[in-house]
Length: 100
Image (tube, rainbow, N blue to C red):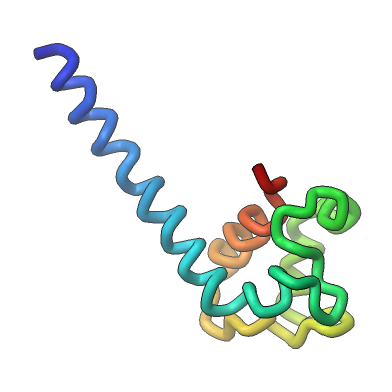
């Protein structure tokens, strides 16, 4: 009984995280994948920790500014014209996380 209760409670807390992760992946697949999967136009590739390191070192505020204004080959707002800053943060974190 305790195991079942634990799993039920754990599942309720884990569900929003899983949904959020899937939402980030869906948004990435719609807006970021074209350049960040291949490195097109100099974009740092998703999962390439080495390419992302100098960008992350500038801080999230600077990354958000670059995202909003565009940088080199990336147009303003990337291709996500309706993303919030929280969504941009989640996308940056997703793309900059080293591939397993």
